[in-house]
Length: 449
Image (cartoon, rainbow, N blue to C red; front, side):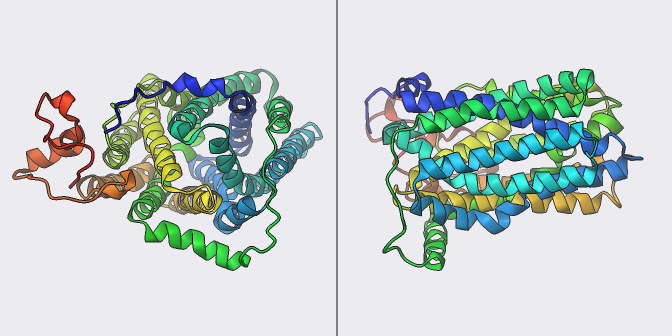
């Protein structure tokens, strides 16, 4: 085993290009979360009842993520063929223009639910194209040994924005209305545009001599499905994002119809998830990702189900806080594992397949939840879909895939259910000898069930 002391999370900030991108993206994401709150509140504020509110908010979320289904794989091919710096700047500038358009139509008095959903769909096209190139650029700004820390720092930035943005948005909307929140979001694109301009030159990827686009698409799919680790990550991601969609998708409806709150409460509810995603300690270095991901999914389900039964504001916020912790563990660990299994040559295509599995499954989950809104109350929708996720997450936990960590499968002695549960939670067989106090022949992270 490698005895070198791992670098701390903050060490990635010594790479100046990564630091500027982190800061620029952080400010921009605060604006994006403000916009998310404003979009959600703009479509539910005049809803006549809980059913209409739930339907509108889930259609909004469906429109936001629908483009990923059709564009994620193509976006990965484009990312691997073009100059990533120029392409990233073009996409961020396009998102800025659309954000400005939302503010403009609001001030002109044309901000109907249909207009909000239409412009949100257009933004979704930009973000679908942006995802693979953004996730392909970030690892190039740090050494490979620090990719895990870079991904963790990026997740921290995103979740800090998730914490700060909704709270600010709730206050701004309550005092000045949704139009001002949209305008502030448009301004926050400036730092990230400057950060992209300051990136070091990226390799020219004209695509000349490359395989046909369709063959590149197939290559990315073959790599993901042909590798046991990436295949399991894809299946778990799609399952999680589809069935967990209504928890966050129906937050505005819960705030208005279940808890009797306003836009400020909606902002605090989103902020509670963000706070939970920020306040989290590091797992032991030996703890395997193929244990952590399904375990975090199970924890998310437990807190989400409890939240669906809450009728008090403070309890709902506390439970959402713990949902945020489990959500961050699930998504960040999945992204890190996927980045480490991909190669530099196919990173864009592999990342795009994973984006298709999670962000592509999300709009389908929102659409399904929206359809259920005609027959079920918002609380029942969350209970039904999260309950199904709980069952599947438990299956992933007890039938783990060690290839996620690049490990081979081996048999473990699990004579009782208690032993099986203990191993799934503690990952005892992965603890190094010095942690166990055993001989050098004790099981290590090089072996697995």
